[in-house]
Amino acid sequence: MALPHTQIGGGGLHILVAEDIDGGYTVPNRGVFIHAVDGVSLTLERNEVLGIAGESGCGKSTLAKIIYGAVEPPLTVRRGRVLIEAGDKGFIDMLSCDRDTVRREIMWKTLSYIPQNSMNVLNPMKRIRDHFIETFKFHGMEIGKRDVVNYIREVFNSVGLPVDAINAYPHQLSGGMRQRIVIALALMLRPRVVLADEPTTAVDVVTQLGILSFLKEWQRSNKCSIIVISHDMGVHAYMDDRIAIMYAGNIVEYGEAEKVFMEPLHPYTKLLIESLIKRGERTLKKGILGSPPNLANPPPGCRFHPRCPYAMDVCRREEPPETIVGSRYRVRCWLYSRDGR
Ligand code: ATP
Ligand code: SF4
Image (cartoon, rainbow, N blue to C red):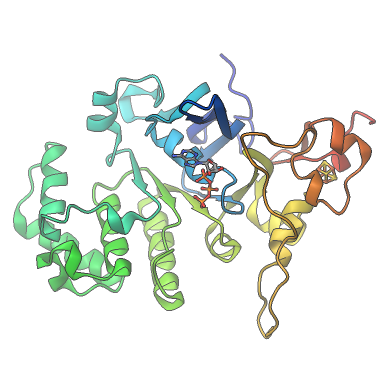
């Protein structure tokens, strides 16, 4: 089966392909479906950072859970595949592969997930060092305590954590420290793909910069790929090679980050970028008027039309098609459509 959009970014370069993903939440007893991800396709190339940006509630975390195969009720996937290259096994589909294989062969080793609010995922009954030792053991890796401690020492230094935190229980550490520990755990088996959902929400700006530069350096030196999910365009400006802008369950603009930041096409992207504070500015930015739609009942046509300063009649009636603007660029907006409406 042909993979749509795999040509974006060049042939044979991809390590992960998400293909026409459609999913959301079924609200029990109310017959309501919250359509959080609507026909999303994207590719992740080897050795790149791909950002997924957009306001809160636009479906970023839901997409991350689906890519990781963490699909449990009320989340359901109605369509799509997530293909990941798993060494000599070739590409496997995270959504149809049996969970045991995914847990043993893919998670942590090939694909690691740093979930949103990750500081709360540590087991409160276990010391930090035991989390590391058990992860190695679960994957059948023979490793001595000294090697674990050496690894921890190296990574903790890089992310600004005191090494003696390895003897602490999670509740003895701050939220920011726990978040950095989860990042260190996620990178431990040197996965080829890291999925980081808001990796710096619980930390101050100085620590944020330390974590982001560590992640970027780690990605470069290990030649792996990272998907960074964040509502913060500053994080994307710093991290991304390519970026996908999400609005109300759709990807509305997708391309090289430098181009998107310098010459954004979609009106929503323009507003997101304008909301960034620039050096020397001391005024509060206005933000985007209005709020994202209710995904149980999104507006007809372009979902952004109630907030868009350029909305035309066609925008209120019909969903905009995706327009390929260049070999590595696409946008979903009637302003760029070539079908003459
Ligand atoms: P945030 O960064 O605030 O999490 P997001 O862009 O990651 O925002 P999602 O968390 O994916 O967005 O949410 C997309 C939509 O799905 C929202 O309307 C949200 O209210 C809804 N949603 C998320 N989790 C659930 C759930 N467990 N049950 C029902 N609806 C949910
Ligand atoms: Fe605005 Fe229309 Fe483009 Fe939607 S399709 S972003 S409403 S101009």
